[in-house]
Amino acid sequence: MLERVRFAPSPTGPLHIGGVRTALFNYLYAKKNKGVFVLRIEDTDQKRKVDASEKYIFESLAWAGISPDESVKKPGAFGPYRQSERNDIYKIHITELLEKKGAYYAFDSAESLNEARTKAEKETGAFKYNYANRATFDNSLNLSEEETKARISNGEAYTIRLLVQPDIEIVSEDEIRKTVRVNSNELEDKVLVKADGTPTYHLANVIDDHCMEITTVIRGEEWLPSLPIHTLLYEIYGWDKPKFVHLPLILNPSGKGKLSKRDGDKNGYPVFPIAWNGEFEGYKEKGFLPAAHINYIAQLGWSSNAEDEIMSLEEIVDAFDLKEVQKGGARFDYEKAKWVNQQHVQRLNIEDAKSLVLKRSTELNDHFDSKAILKIVTLIQERIVLLNDIPVLCDMFLNSPKVYDEKGMQKISKLELDPLITDIHQLIQDNSLDEFKDAIFRYCKEKSIGMGAVMQTLRMAAVGSLSGPDIVEVVKVIGKNSILERLELLRKQL
Image 1 (cartoon, rainbow, N blue to C red):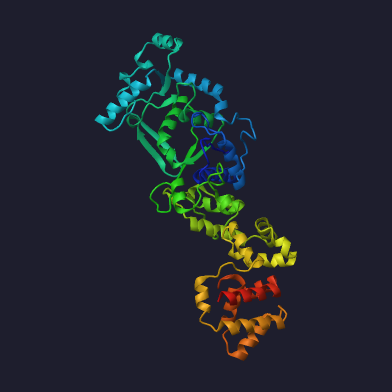
Image 2: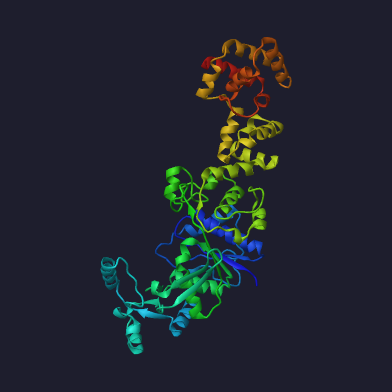
């Protein structure tokens, strides 16, 4: 059987990285099994719909390299791929559900329901509309067929509720959690069709998954409590159930709750793949490579048996196995995400790395030839954690230090700096930059001065810090005039 999976986001706002991971796992499973990955827009809740959200979903997945095989942009044989356009399909199956006595009409007003809810919460702490109290409500189970038809014909507002029979054990299967057993008495007669005639999530997604021939439903753990309802609907219709996989939650760094936008705001990291509404930065804007972001997201809840955890999307597809998806929540670690990004940057070939550097530091072309730019790229590539680091790293080649590291200055201040700077100045003037390092060795030997003293002084003058790329290579790139100017600036600073 051809495996068909779907990612079905609601266009109610930006796509959280939890949604990106759900889309990714669906994509990985489809590609690993040579199946089909469907993107379906679940927009039945028109009140919460945000117009820019659908476009954002497509742009986010495109940036991440997750390409649907079927969608509103790439229709196949199972459309429409937007739920708001599938009402004719829903009407047929709503009628079928009523004929099978799997649902009933409910004419209860919002006021009467609120009153019943308030009373139940005071008395028992919870309210359920189910087998125990449905006889007390205004629904077709308490009316004759003629009375029901008459009220509908008169234009009375109604919803359609699932009829959950009491004292039944509903058995569901989840590929991660195995058998899930629930007594039907614990369930509510969920609203399946709203008063405006549109289906709720529970009904629409079951109908859509059946009609689109979805074989495996991979979704977040938050939908696990809905599994018995969906199982019951499949059984009422007499349809074959897909396999269900409920992915573990992505937890905040403390491990005490689901990762949220508030966590990101508090701790300084994004929770969206790309910028949203000009207000929130995403991983793209923070300077993550798409491949690195996906590599890290894939590790949230899934452990590969591969020796190297730094993997391309193609390598992740080859290694992916649902059996290795964990039950417990996956704790988010932004520092680990940045480390993964750094590893991906380091593994770029020199031409790809050069392209990224030039996009973020266009001034290099105005000051250096191609050979010098390649040297700059080799010097900074291993130091790039996020792509936004590039302008700062390139600035040491373009400009004299604007500030000097305080701890570094304290360290070199113990040296006799004025005569040392004078001697380094002379060494640079008297030797070619290719011979400069050997000249330093000779000087240190003659003067009985430690090599570190000279190099630290030179480094502080060149880049304003005691850390950074090979300082001799930096000096070769910036040239004699520039390093001489920087030495004099350091002398003035001292």
